[in-house]
Each structure stands twice: as C-alpha cells, then as structure tokens.
Amino acid sequence: MGKVVTIKNNKGGVGKSWLTLQLGHALTLLEKEDQTPYKVLLLTSDSQNNILTYSGFENLKIEKTLEDFVKKGERNEIRLRENLYYMPLEKSNFSKIFREKLKNSITILKNEFDMILIDSVPVLEIDQDFLEIADHIIIPTYMDKATTEGIIRLMDEIEIEKIRAIIPNRYIKSKKSDTMYNELKESLEGTGIFLTDPIKQSTVIHNLLEDGKTIWDTKSKDIETVQITIYQVVEELLR
Ligand SMILES: Nc1ncnc2c1ncn2[C@@H]1O[C@H](COP(=O)(O)OP(=O)(O)OP(=O)(O)O)[C@@H](O)[C@H]1O
Ligand SMILES: [Mg+2]
Image (tube, rainbow, N blue to C red; front, side, top):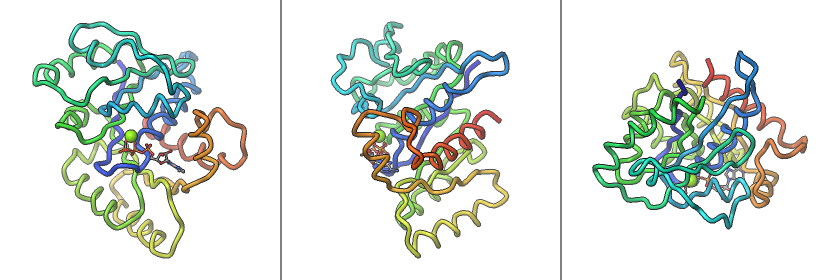
C-alpha cells in the first residue's frame, strides 16, 4: 500500500509545485528493498497544473483529469519521467460529492503507486481533505516573518506528528533570515521534524525551471547541495 504525502503551505510562491516534482523525481531514482524502482504519482489541488510546465510538458493536450477519475473512474496519467506520473486537475471547484468520493479514489491509487505526492494549495477546503488523507506532510517555506508566522499557525492546525520536514526555499541570505532560520531550528528541537538546510533562490534553478528540467536532469555541480537536501527529505519519507 502506497503512502500519501501532502506538500502544504497556505502561502503562495514558496515552491510547493516545484518541490513536489523534485521529491517525486528523486524517489523514482531509488530502488525498493526488492530492487524494483518506486512508482510515483503526483496530484494537485491547483488547476494551473504548474508541474506540467516545470517538467517540460508546457503545451500538452490534457485528456483525463483527476475529476474524470474521481467521478467516472476514467484515467490516463501523464508520464513525466520513467515511473513518475501526473494526474492533472481541470478546475478548482469541487462539489460535495466529489470531495466524498475523493478519498476512496486515492485509496485505489495507493494500490498502484508506492508514493502519491500532492501539491496542495488552499482552495475550497479540498486541501483539508488532502491533509486528512496524508500519511506525511512536507512544508516548504520562505524565511520571512509573515511566512514563518504562517507555518507556526499551520503547525497548530494540522496533526503535527504527520509533519516530516520543513524546507526553507528561495532563501536569500541575510542577518535576519539567518536569525529566523536558527530560531525555527531551535523551536523544532525534540519534535522529530527535520528542518533542511535552506535551498537558495538560485539562477541555476530558475534556468532549469525555464527549460522544463528537474534537478535530476542536470549534471551541474552547482545543484549538488540541493540534490542532497531533497534526498534527505526522501529518506525522512521512507523511514
Ligand atoms: N529555489 C528556487 N530558486 C529559484 N526559483 C525558484 C526556486 N524555487 C521556486 N522557484 C520559482 O518560484 C516560483 C514559485 O514556485 P512554485 O510555483 O513551485 O511555488 P508554489 O508554492 O507552488 O506557488 P503557488 O502557491 O502559486 O502555486 C516559480 O516561478 C519557480 O520557478
Ligand atoms: Mg504551485
């Protein structure tokens, strides 16, 4: 039975979609104990489907969506990379019946995929369902005051024992952001939540994104520290 991981922050632009893709791709490059690769599915509550652009599928004609699967059982996931699939979302409005059926649909997918990663934006409470369904939660964040206050509120609202890692992303080094990082690190001591090294706001990452490439599609030395950070998070998910 596969695990569900929800990537969550109420704040926009912190890197939820990008990190969902990087984590998913990382997993597919590992092997399970029986030496077969992990099969990974990415989902989203965001009908912008940014993951498609970020993985190089910008002008793809979408045939089947999460709605088709939940309502009619029809599916045709997009293969982004070997063993990495994406089920796009058509609209960001969800009926009560859709939300009721969603959980059951995810259970079906758990039989087929080792990990389902969900890029979750706050829309019409469907993100609430995605938090409930989740076995693990990952919080990408930004090291400024408002976003940090936001994640502290979020940690009060969700089941804290589900949170596996917090990933400061788009990090711009300054005295203030360093202090904030250290304070967050202290406050997480003893919680079992892994605070990663910050991932810098980086031109290399920006360029990869523009080219529809993940951090695993490049041999650039500049990206090695980011790869290590992502693998550390994957290890937390597999523990
Ligand atoms: N470490 C990074 N360095 C440079 N650019 C980055 C980095 N992380 C993300 N980005 C860029 O920042 C923007 C926001 O990233 P992303 O779309 O993943 O955030 P998001 O949290 O999913 O946002 P939204 O809430 O709007 O869906 C994108 O344009 C992405 O290309
Ligand atoms: Mg997004």
